Structures are given as structure tokens and as C-alpha cells.
Image (cartoon, rainbow, N blue to C red):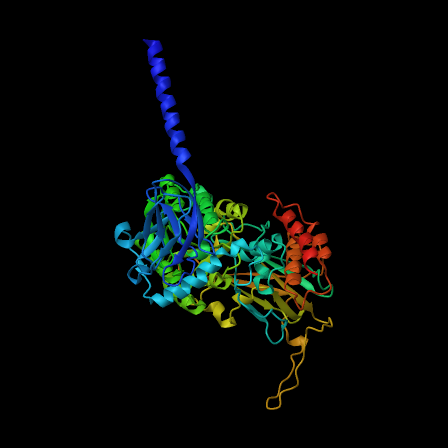
Length: 628
């Protein structure tokens, strides 16, 4: 009996194997071209999926071509915003499809679950932009053709960056106050690294020197009192101009252990438009957010909102303990269509406010390449939208992805105006840095509307120049104006700012002069009229509690004793500032070279547990061969 049972079991297993092999044998490569039935133009980014198989989809390339593995008898579903969906049985390895436009469907679909699901069928509550069919076609044509820029590694001609003038020297006698909003963003550094690793020099406007400096960790004194921020300062010789002095101002935010972070109400706002197609875009977004999901606790909650031609909620607010459900929702996303970013932002804020946690961390995490082309899409329009939404108490983290079509200018506006921060994710290592190693700083704010105002003593300072922060400058009156928005600091964040100072008595070509005024009598102040203070400057800082409306001021004076025994962190940060000025072809870079940058950085490798400083040196060495 036992022998017969074993034989029966063996026969059963053998039949199962034969059955599986038979099914596998029927699987084949199906390929073809998808076109517009009216004019024969290829439908770039058309979604091709196997009916009933989640995660089985692919997307047509720039010529409308697709390839997918399927079995005879299975049904291929062809979906494209603005066109009638088609379902065709697989009968052979070649299947060309002509699709017909359908205006009724153009604005009623959102890319989810490896295909397009109608709003009624999916049951999601979304917002749809009121667009004409012609507007949808125009936006889609630009967006989806550019989506495949990843095919050509040199495809960087369509990236956009804000243009700004470099800070000049100011005379301490006439303008003793320098005021700016702090900046914890670091997107410019990883974006620059992406350029260098591709063998290209970055655009000058892509370099924000302060973001290069702030990419690294520095050993600043931590706050110990009631204030969530601590000020540090030191002064030494300026490495790119030996006649000048260099002042480093450091801020350190209070650290909070991940286990002690308040409950989080997160909304992942994910761009699934055509321009996000590819391994360095949407696929990297999925992998990145899975790292963050691993850190979620039961009291944390996550909702997922996506947008392409329209916007929709694909995952209601879900407990952080249900990690598999959140991961599965991410896995089902695919890219295609135009980019209604404004509609997505509005829906994300609506959902974040609906699930608002008092005294918690309420935050939207936007993942996009910034290429908004439907509805609210201009920098001015996005700025106005975000300024209204930030009053809700919901913060914003902006994560940039992609290359060739990256719209840094829009991403920067969203981060600056949305009480948020901005990082650029060029690989999984950077995703781990931002979403795991610096998890608390990325998603938990400890101080908002943080402003700095430096008062220079003209008895010792002839002129000064703020290095970087051109997009963060404020009027001197803004420092005491609590209605004026400024930057936020997350748990453990550090901020560094450099001032290049021309001491009194030093001749400098950077200090100009003007003629006496014809209609006013002016008298130059004599040194004897100054106070008898021996301070070079005083640092003033204002901040608000994350849920507060009234700011508090703290101050720290700095005396320059004329020495140069600066810390290793000072030297390394100064080397990064030198590098940034070389990349920008700065008027103030002096005669330094990339070799000088490397030499200075090598004297400051002691605080480099993660290896970021050594990676910086390798990047500088690579830049030498490119900048010719």
C-alpha cells in the first residue's frame, strides 16, 4: 500500500511538472507597434498589460514599439490616456495595434496597477483638470517623447534651473546687516554628482554652493536648552584669497531618536506621468520609498496619491504595520500620460488634512521630475498654490528623480514655499542616506521659519560677501516679520554658511567707491564714532516651533583673534565651497585649482564614517578631466 501511494504521488508530481512545462512552452515574446488610428503616429508611452496579471505591464518606446512575454490565448490590454482601450487575444508573436482617440476617456483615467483603471471602476476620489483634447495631446506629446530620454545618456538639454546672480561684496559701513533664510536642501550636490558620473560638466545654474556644503555632516555643538537650534561660529584665513578672512556659521538642530519621533501621517505623492518612465525614475521611486516603509511604526500612517493626466488616491491611509500592503500598492504603479502636478498636490493636501494628527508629523512626500505640464504648472502658479496649502500645518518633502528632463526650478520652488526640504535621488545609496540614515531630519521638523541676520562691525569689517544662498536672501526688515516665510530644520539637521570678509585696512579690488552725492551732503563716519566692541560680528537667529506662529530670537557674537587654527570641519567645508565656485566659474574663486580643493579636503577626512568625504575627493579628481 505504501509503495502504491508513493507511486501515485510521483505520478501526480510528474503530471504537475509536465503541465507547468506545457504552460511555459506556450509563453512567447510578443512585440509590435501601437499607433494613432487617424494619423499613424506612434503612441509613445502607451501601457501594454496582460489582463488579470498585476505587474505584468510594459510601455511603448519612442517609436511606439513594445515587447512583452505572454502566452497564446492571453488577453493584452492597450491603454492610453485620451484613447479607447483595446483588449486583444494573443495569437502570434507579432501584434500591431491602431488606437482611436476618445475624448470622453481622456480625463477620466489615472495610471494605477500596471494599467489604466477608470475612476468609477477604481472607486477613488480624485480631481481632474478641465482640458481640451488638443491640450491633452500637446502636453502628452512633449511629456512622453521626453520620457524616453534615458535611452540617450547625454540627453540633458531639456533640464531647467533657476538663474540667479552671484552674491557680491557689501560694505559694512553702508550695509551692516545681511539677512537670509536657512537652507537644508542638498539636491544640488547629488544632481552635480550625477552629471560628473555621466562624464559631463554640470550647468552653472545647477550649482547652489550652499547645498554642496550642507550635503555633509559636521560636528557642531548640539542644543542642550529649550531652544531646538544651537549656533556655532569660527573664523580663519580664506583659502581662495589669503588677504581675506573666512567666517563659518554653523547651526545644529536637536536630534530625536527615531523611536521617539511623533506619529507620522504621510502621503506619498507620486508622479506616474510618461516622463517618469524608466529605471532611474519611477522604478527608483518605488525602491526608495520601500526603504522608508521599513522604518514605519504601527502608529504611523501612509496614503498614496498618484497623478498623470489626472490625480487619484490609490491607497487610503494605512497603518505603518501593514508594510506589505503599502509595498504592493507601490509595485502596481506604472508610468504614462501627461503631468497634472497641481491637481496631485491639491489632492495630497486634502488627504493629509483629512487624516491630520495633532502634535504629529503631517507630511507629503512628493516624488517627481518636476515636469508639470497640465493645469497649474508654472513656477508662479505652483508657488501660489503651495503658499495657500502650507497654512494647513502639513509639511512637504520634495524628492527629485530622473535625468534629461529634470525641472529643478519647479522642485526648488515647491520645497522653499511648502515648509519643506528638497533632495535629488540619483541612486539607491542616496535614497538610503535621505530616507534611512537621515530619516528624522527628512520627515520631522523641529524648527520652522528659521532666519539668520548677521550684523558686521565696520570697525573691523571693510566688506563682506555671503557665499551662496542667492535664492534665500531676505530684506533686513523681514527678520523681525513673523509673517515672512523661511526655511525649516529637521531633527539632527546641520546648516553651514560662509562669509568672506575683507578686513579694514586691506586693499581690495572688490570694494568699490562712488562719487559724492550732488543733492545731499554726506559725511563719512570716522572710526572713533564706532562702539568700542572688539567683536567682528553678531549672529542673530529667529525660529518658530513647528506649530507656532511667534518667533524667538537667539544671538551669538564672534571675535576674530587673527588666528588660523580652524577645525577640520572648517577646512573640509571650505574645500567644498572652493569646488562649488570653480564649477560656477565664480568671479571670486581666485587662482585656486581643483588640485588645491583636493589638497585641502585631504586634511579633513577624520569625520568620514560613511565615506562621503572621500567620494567628494574622487568627484573632484574626475572633474579635473572634464573641465577643460
